[in-house]
Structure formats: C-alpha cells, structure tokens
Image (cartoon, rainbow, N blue to C red; front, side, top):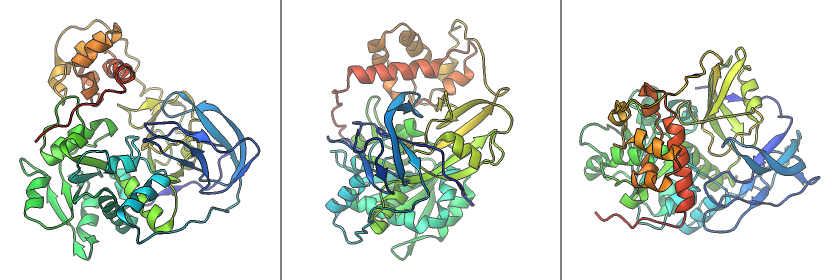
Amino acid sequence: MSVIKLDKLPEKVILPLKQHDGIACAPLVKKGEEVIIGQKIGDCEGSDLAYIHSPYCGAVDSVAEMPNPSGKRVLSVIINPSECADSVDFIPEKDATPSRLLEIIKEAGIVEYYQKPTYLALKPGKRIDTLIMNATFPLITNAYLDSLDKVLEGFRLMLEAGGISRGAIVIRADDKESIKAFKNAKVGGKPLTVAPLIGKRHADYYFEDSDDEIIVLAGGKITYTPTMMNLLSGNVMGRKIPLGYEPADVHVAVCGVKSAKAVYDAVYEGKPYLENVITVTGAVNRPGSVLVKFGTPVKDVIEACGGYKGEPGKVIVNGSRVGVALYTDDSPVAKNTTGIVVQTKDEVLRDVSSACIHCARCVDVCPMNLLPGRIAVMADQGMYEKCGEYYALSCIECGDCAAVCPAKKHLVQLIRFSKLQLLKMCAEAEPAEVTE
C-alpha cells in the first residue's frame, strides 16, 4: 500500500509539550534558538513522562499556548522549519539488555495510541504475561506492511524489554491484505502462526499447543479504539475484566503497530519518536494513509491529500464517533493521532435533543452492560459521584448508545465529561489487583 508523504515544509510547526497521559514537559528551548532534527526540546520529571523531540530543523518562533487535537490549548514550542537536514547523532544499541531497552524506549519518547508512555505500558508495576498488539486499524496496519519485519522485531524487543513471555497480534478478520502479509512473515526464522479468534478459542488456547513466542489472531470486524482496551483484552484473552479495572489487572499489556516500529527505530537506528502514519478519510480529494512528522498542522496534512473536497463542515481527529472535532485546522498532529476525518456540511448531524423516552435502546446496545441514559442524566446534573457508582469510567465511548437514541441525546459527550470529572476527583485512587 502506498503511503502519502508531505512534499513541502509546513509554514509553522507546533509541538505540544504534553502528548501523553501524564506530566507535561518543560521547554528546553526559547525564542530565537536554532534546533535540529532529533533534538530534545521538552523534558519532564516523574514516573509517567514522555520526552518531546524536534522532527524538524529550524528556529524557535515562540513558546506559547496553541490549539491542540484534544480541543484544548496546550503549551507548545512553535518552530519555523527550514530545509536543513542536520540532526543529533543517532546511536544504535543493538545488543542492549532488557533494562537498557526499557530506558531506550523511555528516552525516545515513545507513546501508545491510547496516550500511555510505552515504557509504562510494558512495565506497569504488575505482573504481565501477554502483550497484545492492536493491529485492527486496517489502513494503518497496511501502511506498515512494507516494513513488517521491522514491526515484528520491534514487537519482539518490547517483549524482551518488559520481561513478557508471549505476544499476540490482533488483526481484523476482513483485513485480507494484513492476513496475507503476516502468513508470509517469519520471526526468528520460523513462520508466524495465524489463527482465527472464534468462540472459546482465545489466545491461551493457541499458546497451549505452541511454543511460539508470537502468534497472530484474526477475528471479528471491530476496530478497537483507545477507549476499548478492556474489550480488546477480554475478547482476545477470554479473561473477564471487572468494571473499574484495566488490562494490567489481568496481566495483559496493550501496544500498537506504530509503537512497535518506533521501538525498532529507537534501538536499531537510535532515533527518537518523530513521526508516524495516520489516516485521512472523508471529504478530501486523495484519501489515504499519510506519513506525518509530529507538530505538522492538520491543514498541511489535508493539503498533501489534495485539499478539501468542497467546503468542509467538520474536521475530526481520531474517529468520527469517539474523536474530537477541531475548531481550527491549525491544530498539529500529535503522538496519539491515528486519523483525520473530514465531513461536508451536509454530513454534519445537527439534531436537536429532546427528553428521554426511557426506551432503553442505549442499554440494549451497550457492549459494557452499562446504563448510558442514566449516567448521562446524572452527568448533566453534576452528580459525578453517582456517575462513578454507575461505572461511568468503564464506558468505552463506542457511540452505539448515541447512534440508536431516538431522543438524540448527547450521551457520549455527557458520559465523557463525567469521566473527566471523576478522574480529577479520584486521581490518586488505584484499584486493588484482581486475583485469578
């Protein structure tokens, strides 16, 4: 699959100093300073950090709060890029120990698609026996098939760094291109096992009859978004994750295709995390997968795809259902950006919500067996503790409830807001480990 590349420099590069779920970085540069490719420009302290490196050469225009894909304004380093190709010295470390591998991943600033720093995902402070690679985004997975050997080696390095004994790569059953590529791939000189994920045949079923360190599982037609990690882990491993818990509580860690490739680049080429592939779909003239350096404004990515097809009605980052609608296309691509969806004015839904009719359709379709309508009402009234009692934090924000609601209630937005408030209220609380 061909990947679109930007053929010209953006006018300005905006590098947010917080591109992960954790502590924001402090700027290491100031206005007027020259930076080169790979230079660390954001540093932070603590246990949950992700350093920021410059993907471009250029001069620092300013350090200020700027638009961000999250919808908020975030302190960012703004760079006027130049054609200069100077970079820091990239030093490979091919024979690193597991502890050193983890440190390399940390120093490279690699972040998962769900915003957790990769070194923390691999070593969450709990025993992990299986690492799942979420390869259920077909357009993104297909874009990396030309470098599949590097992705697989990066995945193996992640297992080694985390001291994890086995890894399962999950792809969609209808992603025929990826299935074919994985069937032809090898790890350690051995062909990969590609097996169906059906019925009670979960990952453990295949690992029991195999001495393979890595297997590939194809099942379903679900694209597991960042909020669906519990569902992914439960469906793949067959381990029930109680409401309020996370995959690490049942000894599972989750990574993405992009981070596996980034780990390979960090170890074998000495490069920090500077770019990845995102998808651009909808009302653009040339939709597809685009290789983008972090900090590149969305408008430049759209231009590389032939520009808008007509007048855009809405630009959404990270999914039309669960993503965030941008108020400006000057917002930059960040480490957790997976895709951009452009809608025309006619495609933008402008329904006016009315009173709930208590039909319970939202309850019927909820994959997490929650009461979306009830949680949304309590969120609308500011009863966030009650939202917590109804397990609002377990909502995966799939959007099914809002899609079937005849009253057109803004269920996902209300539940998401309640989750943000709950996280603020109980930031220090941690659930006890699940026992098997």
